[in-house]
Amino acid sequence: MYPVVFVSLGPGEADLITLKGLKALQSADCIFYPTTISKDGTKKSRAFDILSELGITQTLIDFHVPMNKNRSLAIQSYESIAENIKQRFKNNEKVIVVAEGDVGFYSSIHYIADKLEQYNIPIDQIAGIPAFIACGALAGIHIVKQEEKLIVIPGIVTSNDLQLELEKGNVIVIMKTSQSEKAIKDCINQLPSATYHYFENVGVKDHEFYTKNIMDISMRKFPYFSLMIIHK
Image 1 (tube, rainbow, N blue to C red):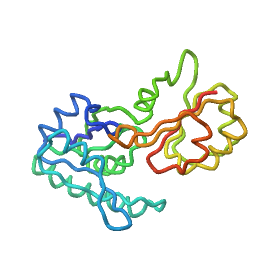
Image 2 (tube, rainbow, N blue to C red; image 1 turned 90 degrees about the vertical axis):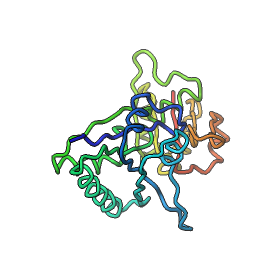
Image 3 (spheres, one colour; image 1 turned 180 degrees about the vertical axis):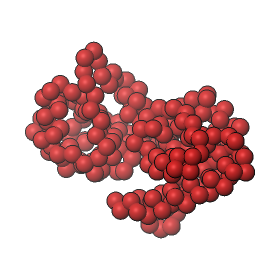
Image 4 (cartoon, rainbow, N blue to C red; image 1 turned 45 degrees about the vertical axis):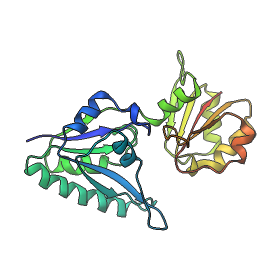
């Protein structure tokens, strides 16, 4: 029996997948990839866009990831996919599940992996580039240097928390900045001497945005696919 392989696609640019990941995709029998559905019913999937650009033509199976703070619907979707994967595993198919960024770094497909482990199905992971690493390259910065500590915040945080970490000399990465937009802007107002690197849609051609101008950041509405790196 082949293990189920979780492949990291990287932050969005097809060329940023690893050779190991690409070879796994090319040898797969079927590939599961996440999609979201907009309010008008349109399906969107960065994962599918990456697979298409890479020329992957094997059986592609999408699964809907509800974008809702109530995770019960998403968990139901993941459990359904795990059941599908279990049957294909029993048929000795080479099954791959893909995720943007790195599959082991704040990736919600861990729900699928957890369920497969309950079924005693072997799993392999192929590492990738998380979004904040790609952001650092886009900005041409060293994210951390020498003895600096890196604090990664996955969403909600207070302005006081941010200031406290910066006063300690720590570098902060904030993922999903739309969940903490007010706190970030309050921190900018209260600590304007820090350096705020703000990113949107990194790795997505013609949609990337980067600035460290605090006035521009303060005036901007943060979308879902945004990220910030803050240095004191």
